[in-house]
Length: 265
Image 1 (spheres, one colour):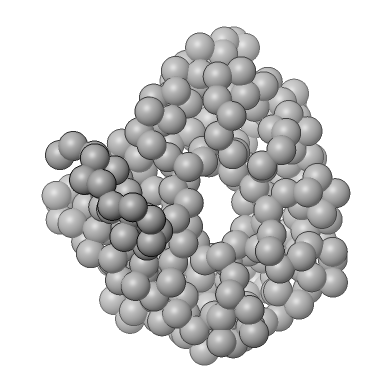
Image 2 (tube, rainbow, N blue to C red):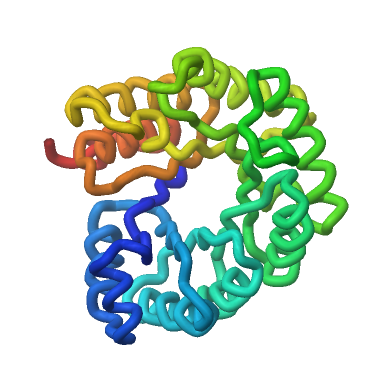
């Protein structure tokens, strides 16, 4: 499993202030802390960067690249910021991401193709809304995969995300079940086995007791792995969820078992 930490969010005050002052230290310290957590990649969520967004993105990525060689997942809807980030990130970048929304479909696959990056594909409708159920998610997947392949992005560079929604939504429980089912059915529907990702923290967003939120994340992660999930975006500082993710990765690996791979409580 590819374990992607979602903790680098440049809009957070501590990182936004460091970025405005062109101080690389907070970014670098955070990246190193996450690498020590055993993650596979780092998601960098740029947020709104203002008029000098491209320069800020390039500075942030260069700072992170000085201290870690982990793959970087670049999260911005702005194609100009994305291109600046791709130039600074180097090899192993992931474009986060494309969907059937016209602006994203026009720009993000082309950038992924040009820079040889992997591409996360969100199973959103063209109007930007979450698909209403398993069938619609699968229909969106077929349309989106066809579109990005026509744009020149090969199947082996695609990561499909059926999109988790908060459990507190009126249909949150049904959606959680349908996401897991979609993860399982995508290979049969598409005719090949794509990489499949879920943003785990979306499930319990919107409040609730922290211990219960983290517990439900871990249970759902086990369901998703059983369905075929191989990539997860998660908060690497939620240690119990991180341990569950490492255990799931170990059990899915088929390699040599060692208790140490799961980590300490």
